[in-house]
Amino acid sequence: MIAKDIHDYKGFFPANPTPVNQGEGIKEEALRSILEYDIANGAGGFWLAGTTGEGPILSERQRRETAEIASDVCKDRVKTIMHVGGITTELSILGAKAAKDSNCDAICLLPPFLYPTDEQSVIDFYKEVSDASENLPFFVSNLPQITGIEFVPGKANAPGQVSMDKVVSEVPNVAGLKHSAANQAMIPVFIGMGLACFSGNGFLPLPSLTLGAVGTVDAPLSIIPSVYNELYKAWVAGDIGTAEKKQKEVTKKISVMKSFNSAADASKALLTEILEIDCGRSILTNRRLTNDETKELISRAKEVGLI
Picture (cartoon, rainbow, N blue to C red):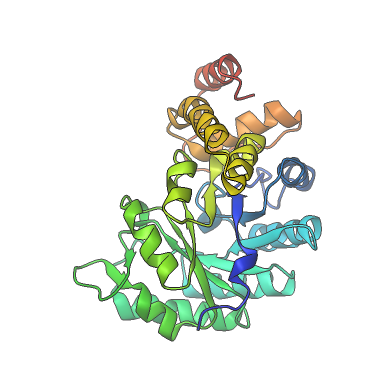
């Protein structure tokens, strides 16, 4: 069953990093500052505790606090899509319950990863977690580069594939997906299924919109929200010239961030500089930038106007 309110999910949704304390818990002031900064610059909502948000390795407490803080900041302003997945079904269920209790608008979920699985196991996992959220709108995270599982329209014909049609038919209240797989040509097919399909490629917001994507979800949107907002507004207004100009700006600026192989740590370093508040470091064993890399990142970011 496709959720009824999918038309509320559109625009650019930053997949923001999650500022965490070195011991336990969340850097609340930093998280609130990130959310407020992005809302002030036009964010339509947030994809919280995703991969750059380090959701799969957050503790139960950190995931719950993220949901509570984000819901408090965003309520009646923009949408909150909370990634609730943990390394086990039990942890994912706890995350789904926390999202519901915190009044998040929707949940999203990577498929099981690390251990071998099959199509029906993925769907059963999604059903259990969706049930635990009392059927909040449910978004699939299609990220085969990391999970080894790709969601495809129609029938699954190869190992590692899961039919999105079966997900829609068996998982309550499916709303859409974040499509981060390489084949962006699938976007119009998912849209044709009645799903809200976000592109997960922050490099290509304009091409994905031309394919029918409802918007973009990615980490860079949290860093330069105004650029993505201007691009999206120009697209909606039919001002293709401005949209193309903003696409070139996105490519130039985000290339700097993407050249460092640590999305979470790089995002936190840039936001620390922009907001002048400590956004922390990535969670070990997630790679951290060296001191020299951080200095180089900040220097290059300033050169291209990323910060």
